[in-house]
Image (cartoon, rainbow, N blue to C red; front, side):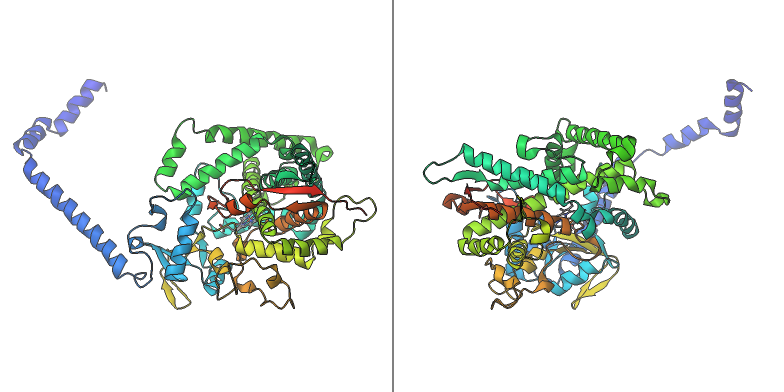
Length: 533
Ligand code: HEM
């Protein structure tokens, strides 16, 4: 049967001419259509407005206090004139002070800083999952242990990664942390020499910047197989790519509409940096896989690579997943630890009497034989050192913008009815600075962490610098070890003095992903002490 016969047969079945005639006899009344469209649009708009008004003033969240605008839009869309970038955390603090511990931060968003509620939400991961901000962070790259939303998938991924963060394994990483701390000491010596004031013997050192480099080098050594040499060379493609990633995450989180669009712009640098990073990671993983036993190294990367040999295919990470998780450790583990360490120095410079107490404690721990640096065994239980770190984690918490959890079912939290799907914007930092939980909460007082010091003891129920529960920080032990080694050795080896302008400037802070000093630098005067075994 050819095409002409098929067409003829179709014409026999369907009388095309008749159909055309019928259509043309019904002339389209455009006026009428226009009116119908207008009525439909009006009905829809009325519906939307009345639902919004209902939710705003009569819905389940309507009884909560908060700025009136947040009944209609989320706090992240509020823009006030004259605010500097990275200042949202200060607004959140003001709203917390004005409206209380449970406040409305959006049509479907509640801000929470009550310690009991915070614990209930974070510890009970069966009922609460991570919120939409984590989904937006998944764009363009496969999810990691940090932003996997599904509970079962997260649990499985965390199980694979956990051995790399066990106390025993972190202890075994100490030699890497020692070598990077040693590189820090060399760099401090070099900077002192460069800026030496012959009269006083002091040089000027940007301790904020150096601890950033230190944290990158530590993750380089432990998760990427070799140091990035940031302390020596100050530049590495991985740190560049990570800075880009942080910038990208910040834009995605703070500009829910513009952010994703900005990311799509060609030549925004991020795609190129990501490609370079992927290539870099691919080479490292291939070297490890092909080099076999000869190139085995006792580090975090090895644990991830070894998962590929697991008998259970579900327990294996693909090369891409390994790359993704390693990059996560860099973003989650460097700025967080570095800024906390930086703030320890900021606080010690503001409180010379506390610096003296810490030095006294450290001087009582002698170097043994040819020991050049104190080791973690000597440091991990020192009361004042740990008090200094904990008090900084409390008052100078680096996660100050809060993060999201969502109840999977209708819930009652401390008497508040919370419908399923409400975004809970939890802010642990606000619990850290709550005067009802911490006497003189705005003051930096390490003694509150020391039993019998005469100061009211710390309320550990209101202390969540690493979050809590199944989604808490996997790198907590890693961070403490790195911070203890760095802080203790620097204090032991150097005399230091504050520079008053720097102390004043350090109060100007910004929070993109983490809280830091706005200038990105904090100079102090330093001089080598004569400390021997
Ligand atoms: C002082 C240093 C640190 C602080 C204050 C800190 C804080 C936190 C907080 C608050 C969370 C929960 C975030 C959320 O739920 O959105 C978290 C999660 C996480 N952190 Fe840290 N962190 C620090 C250091 C580190 C280090 C050194 C690493 C790795 C080397 C790391 C890796 C992670 C990972 C992988 C998660 C996600 C865990 C999961 O969801 O299962 N962190 N951290």
